[in-house]
Length: 346
Ligand code: MRU
Image (cartoon, rainbow, N blue to C red):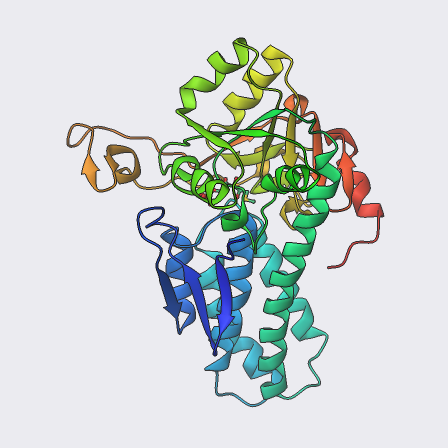
């Protein structure tokens, strides 16, 4: 199983996903600005993975701070928090990870700076480890919705590459396969950046999970033919009412599922649920550069100077979602708020 990011010899090592599947190469980040650049340029992407990168970036930046007392140390961390928070707005995991580190620091303000630096590295690694455990739990809860022989459609990449490992949307698929069920995965190619074609197809093939790649506009036709049994996608930020922001095209897929009576599941680790916002309207949606739409692999496919709209995420209203699969259990969107009453770490 692929692990896209790790802390290695005092540096952050990330698999450069922008080059996949043609080239498997790694980027070694020795300062937090490189980590921030990696998040912005999609060397690392996917909500949980960029949360982990954020934590590692802060830990990395902290190592170079030369102040002594807690207050000065905490002050020196502020530009690092800001640089990382400003990379990508939609996935709440970046904020989630940084808030977790802030809380940890503030509750250990009696420790010396060197101890705090070590604590940050440990916590970033803990976030990575917990993420994989979370995904396995999502897999166990979600696999019960997959029957032997099912065909599952997914959008973008919510797999190992988008997380610490194992994936969120791919977790129920992986567990179903481990349980001996024969399944087929349909991967939407996911324009404009092609995470489905470049990443989901690649990682599932590597793990010998049968996968068929389609263009995004093929999904409806396959549903009409009765060739899809269920959909499972990931999320970048889910609001308290169960509205889900995920890669652009998720909303259209959910409507297609509704029209064809196909269950539409969202795999959502609690780290990507934002209980502070009442609905999807409050989710900040990232807009990216025109070149992602006008070019494919560096090759221009649209007229020069054409006007472009490149919205990276959309919001699927809760009414289209059959259930949200978390590591704490499965919830109807309207019942998602109940998770807050369960005991959740951080
Ligand atoms: O722009 P990306 O590639 O970061 O978008 C990723 C997605 O939309 C994923 O589906 C989402 O982050 C969930 S990943 C487990």
